[in-house]
Every structure is written in structure tokens, then in C-alpha cells.
Amino acid sequence: MSDPNGPSESAMNVVSVLPKDAIPSVDDPTFGDGYFGEPEDEVLVVDPDDGVAPARAYPIRILNYHEVVNDVAPAAEGDGDPIAVTWCPICGSGVVYDATVDGRRLTFGVSGKLVDDDLVLYDRETDSEWKQSTGRCIAGELAGERLRVRPGPMTTYAAFREAYPDGVVLQPDSEGSAAASGYDPSGYAAYEEREAFGLRGMRGEGPEREWNRDDLDPKAVVLGVTPTDGGALGFPLPVVEGAGGVVEATVGETDVVVLAADDGLHAFERPDFSLRIEDGTLRGDGTVWAPATGKSDDGRRLRRVPTRRLYAFAWQDDHGPDAFHATTGRG
Image (cartoon, rainbow, N blue to C red; front, side):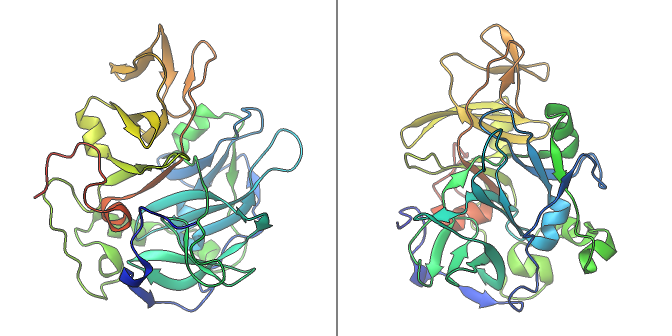
């Protein structure tokens, strides 16, 4: 199935920057209660729909060195669904995908290639290549297929631990250079602070990219909302914050509410009542809600929508300059 929102394959700029599998995927993940990093470290979260099986956190500090975790989503009963937890440090792109295509389970590795500065995954079953931020297969036997996005919010480890006291955390590999370094985040932190973006901003090589707009920084954090019924709209963090922390919109045929909290951006199907942030607390329909989980003090729960978190330049590469919610205007 082709992605109507993505660029044509002929327009993509594919380059090889590392040998295949030079960045090792995590294929046999282990989980535990503890985390060796800092409370403010960011994590990708897989939160089971049933609300019974424990949620899982995948620290970005670990994903920086592996970029993909082949896993099975936790389930209260029976086998969970195969998933791929993916991360591109250059694009700041964190996406969780279903890892089944036409009934076939796929396992993913890191190809060593970039397409428009975005990680190119490959699947070990057909050697087809996939653009990480869109989940679209760009080359090989499965070209044109697209992975289904699952809700995969990003938050801080501290917020994860508070929201999910029984949650578990991906543990580091016990071998390899990343483990020996303690998964040092300093190099990636330096990139986040630089004005330059893309491969040149990360490694100081490759062509310098242009950014011809002044309403949005190229590395502004964006929550890309892509409901299963179609449509794609990016919600920049500064835009949502400027609207008081709550934005309502229709994406495709789905009404959504996007929340900006201290731990990041979250998106849910819009309920039949209004939400508002007062004195740092999310309130609505006579109760208090937790933005990180969508749970209320009286036991209700908002339904998450499929999202991906990434930098503005990467979202624009994938969906064009007008696929952002309520920016102030093009520069």
C-alpha cells in the first residue's frame, strides 16, 4: 500500500554512511524494574490497550546506540503482537510499528543508509528497505508496503515511573562498545543543541541543508498524528504550548486532542467534553486527568491515537511544508 502523504521514491536522496548492521539492533530484549540513567532521560513507551499487562519503557539513551528493538507487545493473556521500536537520532524520530505485513512477521536491522537524513531499516526476511519515519518500504520485494503505526508516546523516565509504577524498562546489552561506554549520551546531546540539522549537523559532513521558514525551528519537536482512517498533521510543541497546552483538531476523519505537558506531547481521540490546563493540572468533565496516560482520577481513560515524535524538518520532508497545525505563517 503506497503512502499518499510521502514523497515519491525518485525524489528521495539515499546515501550509505555505515556498513550494514554496524549499529546492532536489539533482538532479544530484556526488561527490569531499574534504570541506570537519569530521571529526566526520555523514553519511548508501549502501553498495552488492556491496561493490565505492564507498560514498557525504551530509553532513548539505549536506542541511540541500537536504533531498533525487535520485540513483542506485552499482553495480559496469550502472545502479544510483534513490534519494532525504532529511533533515528538525526531526525529525533521515535516510532513504534506493528512488525507484521500480510501475515508475515518481520524483524528489522539497521541498513547503514540514510534517506533524506532519516534511518533506513531493512527486514531480514526479504532484505527490503524501509524509511524509519514513515514506515514505508522504499526498495525490495515489499516496496510500497507500509508498516502500521502504534501509539508510542515519548516521556521522561521520571514521568513513566510515576504514571506506571509497575512498568518495566529495557535493560542495556551486557556486551559491546555501547555497554562499555555506559551508553554515553553526550554526543547526541551536542547535536540537539546545534543549530545545524541532518547528517551535517550530526557528523559535520554532507551537504548543508536549507530551512526556508521562520515560523518554526527545524529541530522543533513535533508530534505527528496519523490516524488509521487517514490523514497526517504535525503538532509542534511551541504551537501547542502557545495555545495553553491543549489543541483540538480533526485529522483525516478523527477528532483529536493534543496535550503539551512537562514530559512532552500526547494525543488522544477527542472526548465529548473539553479539557483545559489550570495551574499545571489537566481538568475536564469534573475530574483531573493525567496527560502522560490519559487516565482520570475517577477511573476513565482517553484512547490514544497513532503518533510519531520527530523534528520539524523530518516531518516536513515526509509530508510537506503545510502539514503542520496552526503555525503562524511561512517565512
